[in-house]
Length: 268
Length: 365
Image (cartoon, rainbow over all chains, first blue to last red):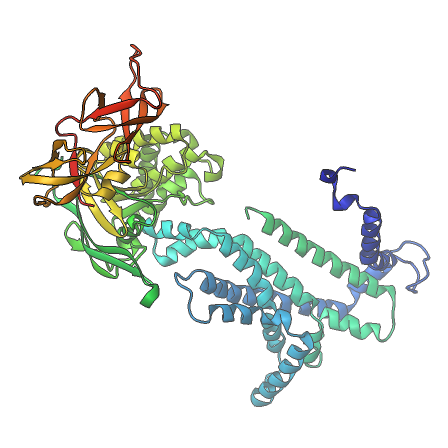
């Protein structure tokens, strides 16, 4: 066997391992999706195809409420996080000379990715409890604020990546061609940054939809989101309705991730 | 040649730029003073790191001078941001806006200036015609070739009719044939628009063929300013002589200086009259550096220089003969090839070299 024909992919057992890995990753999800179409009220016995659990899920007022709440929180959090992350990314890439502590700021912005979620959750619980006592405000603002903070690094990374690959000379050229700093941003930087901003928004949105731990700690009574509601339901009766909700949730995430993928690939 | 009626357009006055501070400080530009008249094709020529691009960026407004003044038509522009200067740049990388069409790129400056739509459209059409890019108006920069991108970059910078057009090594990304075409094209555009061009290059041939005047720079200083002929025929110092064209260096001793020339003695004992750069007046006994161009010297039976042929390199139009002089120095002659194949000396042949009057100059070392 010639050495120049060596390829990792041709090693014996490589394909088998790859298949096992895929089964490992997707078998539970496939099972979940298949049983969401089960006629039976049991999660383990197949009795024929049916959409009854989807009907039940969609007709369930509680599911509707928590879904809307999840989308409202994710929408706000992703929007705010994207705006803040865009400003942070601009400040950390679009300066002529590095300012003192720039690396530090970069590390701090990404810190929520490293800190255990439970720690952030406990910290927010204590912090917001103090504010609740001081102001008496009990609304959705706490969850939105918590999710925003949590989503900033997820929105920041693709935006920053986009800015770093963008030629600084383009903004210089705009200034040279009589664009004021604001015009240069509006006509050159922003349009070129849009794919990164949309990708950041999508990542932030999905992250917010998915967060359980932080929501559990921060939410007041009656502020369940879809994941915390599902977690609560699973502790009681388990019906394929949960499968149906999970499948819909999965579909939503898949759409968001696909959009993210297509956007980040575009003209990168 | 600038006549007495032309006004000076750009005045660079004792301009310095220091990057960093303390021991790490780099003096990119060291008290440079230059005057560039209106409508001139002016070239900043020098090796990389000589400060030519820094100077260009300061005229454009992308760098702040550490000290000194930049005047445009008499008024100091050193404190103006780039968007307030009537100066446009053709960038080395072209820096075309990838999300805009060719026409939108060209119209960008006028749009930023808030000009009426009809005027923008008329100017864009005129510019497209000027650079012969009309069929490409609706293409994106990624859909046109490098040479075409270059033309669009030129049209975009010319569209707002700047006082001065700055060109930062704009031809360096093009292949040789296209580069030659664009050299002619640039000269034509400069003539047709009457705009002052400040052109930065490290390519001496490009500088010689295109410029009205050249400033040769090295290590943050201007070594010489002059027309291509002056720079080539009367280099002020060793650096300029070495950087522009091929040059032979010889050492000699001054016998007697008399005004514009000096009588010098070569190590072989032969005496020659050598031209002097302005401001240099050596005295008898001074050791000086002589320069002479390879195409000015010729092979002879008798001459002030003697040596042995080391190599003869055929170049098509001419043959370069490398002669190892008896003093140990290498001397290169350029012999134009003719149809009558006159016998050229071969490797190992002893030869003498004759240098006509006026072909030798003294330079500052």
